[in-house]
Length: 233
Image 1 (cartoon, rainbow, N blue to C red):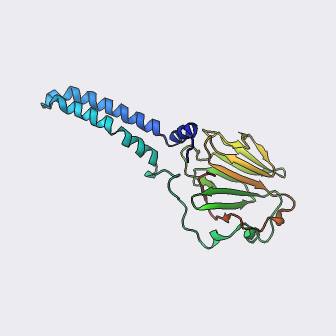
Image 2: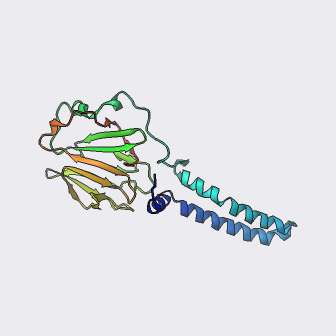
Image 3: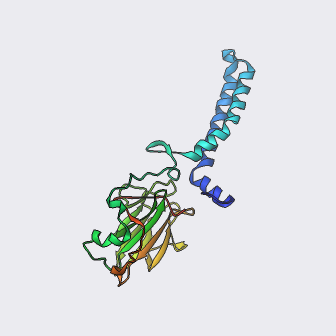
């Protein structure tokens, strides 16, 4: 939730409110000019054009609210991903906590593997990776975000030379690792990865030599399949 003017404007930019409002005003202007020229040909009274302009301006706040709430994409008109959860109801596997991760990996956690944690409307979640993966909006991304400011293939986390690295893949809004631009950057210990100026954020932990000594206190759930994350509000 936006808490100040800067966050509010950043969130409005993410939701493309200004672009939608601009398109609406241009359309109203064009239709008004056309109506003013054509109205006499059809015998329409002058007040009809004025009424259309006044009504269109009065409808502008509704357009702003709709632009804030909905997103237009390949899937049609849908609610903004920050306002509605896209995750399916938790399955029995989804309710596994962090202490059971060893079961997913055949009983052993490998030093250098990474645990990705995020939070959304359903609470906290986690997933472990021991192989390269993409982050973005595309269907081939193992960590996937429904956010128009996130590119289809936004970033890549990969393993090379015994270390975990994060690489931005030429995304439109950039990738930050611990508040610095990610450029084939090495991850060590616990890290914050951000995929644009207003998130989403991920907590990425690189496991050390004592990987099998992960805290068995109640931790975040483990989500299988694609992570439909929406940031760490």
